[in-house]
Structure formats: structure tokens, C-alpha cells
Length: 408
Length: 113
Image (cartoon, rainbow over all chains, first blue to last red; front, side, top):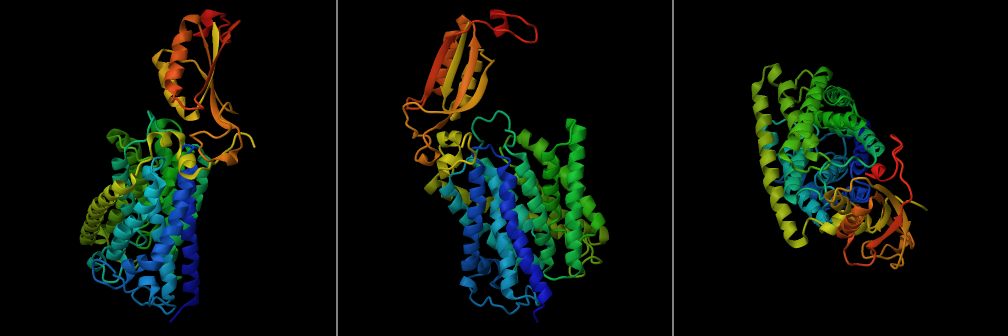
């Protein structure tokens, strides 16, 4: 039985989440040097185009068709059988296609998140192939395991409301792998300052806005769980942004704009798996934990290990996603969402173990398969641009365009 | 005292700076300029980007040096900026009449370094 309010809500949420990919483009684009901003915008935009098609043709089927515990199979190839009647396995009150298109936007933004790790040095052709393969062999299977009907992690009872494992852990670990394998950017004795911080702020605002669709929309219905997810999302972002600014104030002497927005994104990534299962007060704790742990990852651990995760895709999304997934196992409560489970603090330590297992599985799988895909594409396309192209900048060498002029 | 003005490829700035530091020339002024010489607007670097017109983006360096630093400075710029292709740029050397450090009002060769 189709509910019109639910359908409208999910379609609008899909549109919100679509806007997050261009938002991410500006969030990342503002951070790179100005000779590379177009390359980042282009990579995000082409991910939107490419993965929209992949999803319609076979991505949705691989992820959500009722195949077996490990993959969805091809029974919904080309949306065969995915129509306007509801599919009760996912939602009984909205057209199946509405669920499909909502999930499409998740499939688009997840590979786009990885861009932050190898920004300013990956060849465009290689990026296209890598992204298509990664979506197909990492995102689609993981998505099926956690969210798909019959998925083996879902059957174990793992809680991932809107993508702490599927989206943020997977993209974050892929970011860590690619940044290590591709190597550091040239001529960087110190990390360059962002060329356009206002763009970073604009991007954050768009992401924060879109995240309401991402998290509240994941309730797939206009109900109390959606409202709770909306509130926890906003609360965690606020708590994380504020506490990151204070952390900087204490440690570095001044609170920065770059810091408060980075903290907000860390809070948003961390609350994602928990948003539909925890209370607003728990969301404050999650937000504060997000900023402390991600701050350490970005400001202490990264310099110590010396990898060049250009825009902190791992430090913010990967670390935040893993932390949020584990905290879901601690703070989830059936009083908030009767369809969920209780966490450690509500008398169910087993849930934390399930969350831990799911994270370990997602990290291991993503790490190995991403490494394999990278090496494969590298053989045929060479992932990294030539040294000269890197020095000149990707905008001119990959796209023959530049973002800014001096005179008219 | 001499004033060295160099026009170089933008992507060579880091290497030129590195070479200048190596010969202990630390005081430079950098600006972004447009111009063209023999390249007629299309270089190997900006290949195909005719849309930008015939003015190319370059970096201009100004370095004031005492006479004994002149040759090391020139050599460092050449070493950092040379690729052997059209568009590598030019170095101009001018006599410098006077130099005043504003903070101390020192003049001449003591004010330069």
C-alpha cells in the first residue's frame, strides 16, 4: 500500500543526497591548490554521471536483488522487475523505484568520497576505470551484505542506519589504501593552505543540508524515527564542530574556520550509522567523540605516519565511520527505535561485538579489494599523472581548462 | 648592486626557489604576470588551450643582490627553470642605484642582504 507522504519524503531525500556530491566537490575543491580545483569538481561530477548509469544497469541489482548472502546477482539487471509497486523487503509504503533512486545517490557519493585521498595527482582516465570497478566490486557487495535482503551481515543483526559501514568505513579505508599506494604529492614540504576556504564552508553547508536526506531519509517513512534521525544528525554535527574549534583553540591558540567545518563533517560521518538508533543526548556524546578521535587522526597520527591523505578522506570519513559504527553498538536503544537493538549501555554487550565484527569484515574486504583494483588499473592506465603534469596542475593537463584568470 | 628580474614558467617556481635557497639567496619578490615571447600563445605546457588568448601565465621574480651574488643567482635561476623548450623565460640584469631598508634606514650594500 503506497503512502504518498512517505513517497514524497523519500524522493525529496534522494534529491537532498544528490546535492551532497556537488557539495563534496566544493568541500574538497576549496582545499586543493587552485591549479587543481577543476579536476576535483570534475571527478565528483563525473562520478554522479557514471555511477547513476552503473546503478540503473546493474549496480542496484548487485546490491539489493535477493540473490544470496554475498551478492544480489543480476535478477534486477536494467531495473527488470523494479517497478512502482512497493517491495516489502525494503519498504512496504513507497514504490520500489523510489527506494532504488534514493539508494542511487548513496552509491554515487561513496566512491566520490575517496577522491580526497588521491586529489591533485590521479590521471583522469585511470580515475574513471578505478571508480567504476570500485563501485562494482567494493561498494555493491558491501551494500548487499549490510542492507540487502538476505545479506549475511544484516542477518547477523548489524546496525548501520544510513551508512557508517557501507559508505564511510568503505570509502575511508579505500582512501587510506589509495593514498599510500599512489604516494605523496610532489614538492610538499608542508601541506599547502586551502586555496579557497569559503568554498570549503559552502561545501560543508551543502553537505550538512543534504545529510538530513541521507540520515532522516533512511527511515524511508515520515515517522518518529525519521524525526529522531534528523535531530541526532544536526546535534552531532553541532557538537563536533564546536568541540573541534575548542580543541584547536586549546592546542593551537586559535579556533579556525577550516577546523569547525572539518569537525562538523566528522560529526556527520560519525552519527550516520547511529542516527536512527540513539537519543539526541547520545548524539552529543557521539559528536564530541567524533571530533576528539578524528582530530587525533588528522593532526597527530597522519603527520606521524607521513602518508599524504590530501584532504583527510580517511581521517574524517574512515575514522568517523568506524567510530560511529562501534558507538552504535554502545548507545543504540530500543526505546528510540524498536526495530533496532539495544547497545552495551542498554544491557546488550553482544551488539557491540556484532558491530566490531562487521567493521573488521568491511575494513579487511575493502582494504584487499581496493588494493587489487588499484594495482590492476595501474598496469593498464598508470594511475598517477607524470611529474610534469602534476607540477603544471591537473586542470590544464587533464582537462585543458583553468578555473581562474588574472585579466579578462 | 644589481636587480635581477626573471620571467619563468609558473610550474618551475618551486624548483627555482629551492636552487636560490641553496646559494643563500633568500630575499625574493614573486608576482604572477601575463606575457608572451616567441611562443605566440601556445606552449607545450598549455597545449591546445588557445581559448586563453595569446597571453600566457608566467611568474616574475625580482631579486636585488650585491655584485658577488649575481652569478650564483643567475646560475640558480637557470638551473631551476631550464627545460630546453620554448617558453622557459628570460633573465634581465639591471644596475641598481640605491637600496634602503625601511626599518633601519640603512643604505647600499648592507641594506640588501
